[in-house]
Image (tube, rainbow, N blue to C red):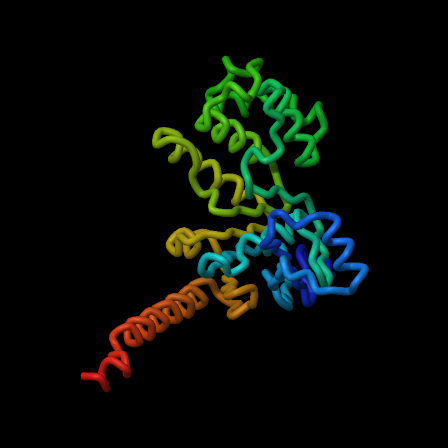
Length: 269
């Protein structure tokens, strides 16, 4: 990894295994292993396949593709949530993953305790979080609920608090997964402005979104994934155009196939 490269992936692949039989027992698993039988209850697929990627300081990257293309999975690999099945990955810098807001919360603890807990997960010590906590409460508007256990928070309150904590950082690498707006209507404009501030403070930004306009405005480089395979990597507007043309051509082909007469029916007629 060069001194300018912040994220480096070399032939990274990730395979997921799915289990179709929820009643598959330990005894049956041991028998399958002993008798060297294939476990018919499980199947696997490659969520990410052979990705090579170098991200340099200052880049703003948008990841686009259809549902199930592997966009969020790639983001989780960069965040260290998933370990690749094969290949190598190197990440140089503090990572702030705005992927699953509130994923590190303990619902038995108070809001304030959870602020410190999430800060620790982001790499901040208690003193550093103490310097930030007033700004977190001011932005979330939840200061009066600081001592209340999270299990009594509404879903909207949880979203506001988790967003306020996650964006009170100065990250080297900011990872965003469809987190361009959260909370109720009155909170969304403030949240959008705050996201843009965090983006401006970050050395590298990687965004997953279906909002092409947002990607075009925020990002300089685009990655198009399809079924875990990197289809295009280049200037964001060029990659968006290629993806939109592909989607349009696919829709046209599917529409044409749907309109073709069934041969058996046509012959019978």
